[in-house]
Image 1 (tube, rainbow, N blue to C red):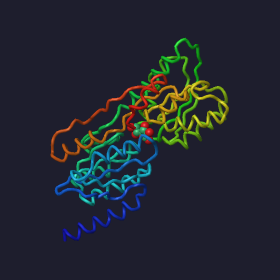
Image 2 (cartoon, helix red, strand yellow):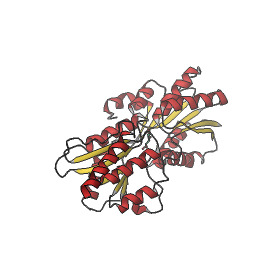
Image 3 (tube, rainbow, N blue to C red):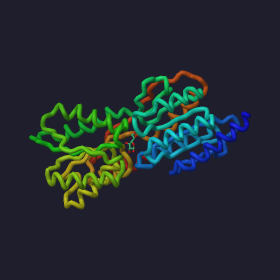
Image 4 (cartoon, rainbow, N blue to C red):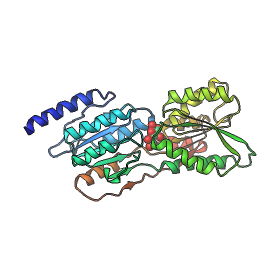
Length: 326
Ligand code: GZL
């Protein structure tokens, strides 16, 4: 009976993973004997940051030590929930995932807990009624990233009388980075009456949507935009195209501060089109691998593992570019 169940579980996994699209699919590379089986559900492939994050996870959770089952959710929560259920059906040793949004995870995480499978959160947080539903979260402090973006803007605006009119390109609606970066940015900006956020809209962390939303901002506000705050570099890079197509100079007519610190941002700063980027380190793979080893071995792990990161401005871009790892 158990063998039949095992076959059924693998068939179910194959079907679910096949329809999860993206570069998902059970990557059962040549895992070694006794390898730790890890089900990993990734948000998608929406930005340079995500691509670097996926590469870091895949490199760290490599065979023969690990048997990685990787699924790309294409930024849809229902695909992540399907993938997590598939991992539970496969009886993986550990589940790890970057939750596309903060809420709606209690039920499936309770199913993982009932199956005795520990869950490690990477990158983004969840909002659940019972914190025991996950072992740990390894990722950045998004509120501090928002504060850092605002602090750069306050410093860069020294001596300006105001009003300084800001438009905001927000990340994916309901995601921890979007919620927290907005909160941190406003916490600092609201303390200085010169600054006004005149428009805010989600660009879903992608270049294409960032460009579209910035075009709408420009149509609505004309030349009355002084600053763009973008929750990630990809949306900022899309917005830069829109600003240039509108006959304005990004980085000069409209100052731009964004978050991630991807290579594209350093190239835009070197070209004078972006003014500052707040680093958000995607290279979480090695920390994730160690946490997977620890929870699999039943070792205690901290509930929250932070990631170190900084802020980079235009004057540093050329020198820093060769050092960038993502
Ligand atoms: C942040 C991460 C965000 C990045 C975006 O840790 O979740 O998602 O800032 C990515 O580029 O799409």
